[in-house]
Image 1: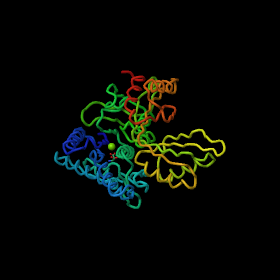
Image 2: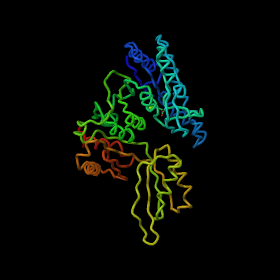
Image 3: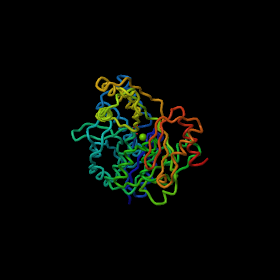
Image 4: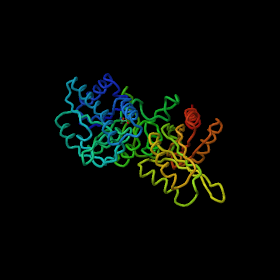
Length: 406
Ligand code: ASP
Ligand code: MG
């Protein structure tokens, strides 16, 4: 008898028919004698729609109220999934994050899990129930409802798998696994049988959209091996695990395009010590994650000034701009420009460490296709460039072809 955690994303529970399919799959595991914990997302589009409604009322709604609002999406799906199992005569109980013992800090809309006490989950499993847990949500010690950041149901599943010491963790989504690129953009993309945590992390945080990056970090930290697979068929998926020697043989594991970044540029910032510290401290205090930062060389000999650009997640752009605007008088820069029309294209692979010339080949390929590079950043296992959003998909295709073939 195995304990299995299965997570179903928004598309997999997108309508009552699909929820019935989920119930059928859960039932097939249970018939084998396995104990199953199911983690579900909100039905596809629901979270976006809730956010949209709130923003129609005011552009920057209170974050505690946003958590109260967004948590309802997952609460709908847990109940419907339980009902679908009941319709098949399978005992099942739904639980909110709080009921499942998920305790978080108090950073609304981006809470971190502090600990999980899954006592009631174990009780219900032992009594023969399928347990269905609402993804993406938790509760503070003080009883406030929190959410874990967009895509946070993945984190719920991985963290529960660790806390329950599950034998197997399956992440069901609308793709067959992790591909060398998004197959909707690059039809030649191939499914990877396995991938290391670090590569997956780069691909996830770079917008491969298969999984939320924090959940992969968590899996790495706690050694949770998991499989990403489709809820629409029975094909084997991609296993995500610790790096093995054979993984180094491949130069590039995948190409990803992140359309969810935005760029903030401070124009003509006085070039003196402490300015960057000031800017990024204020941004950090507003709980905004910064990804790339570029500072140009200064111009104007007498009173040197420079431009500083950085990227943030698109939903944080308004907030970031507000923070920067509030610094204008103190720092004395000329202007701040917010640009949403960017895309970040990245190539990822642990094999880069032992194969030189990878970045050069990427830049050459972009140049040969007339695609201008706006910002560059590199790490041991990735090269990223910021380009114009409208060129994003074309760039992804030519880079995939250059490194991973037709
Ligand atoms: N429903 C949440 C979202 O759309 C969490 C999730 O789907 O994982 O971000
Ligand atoms: Mg999701």
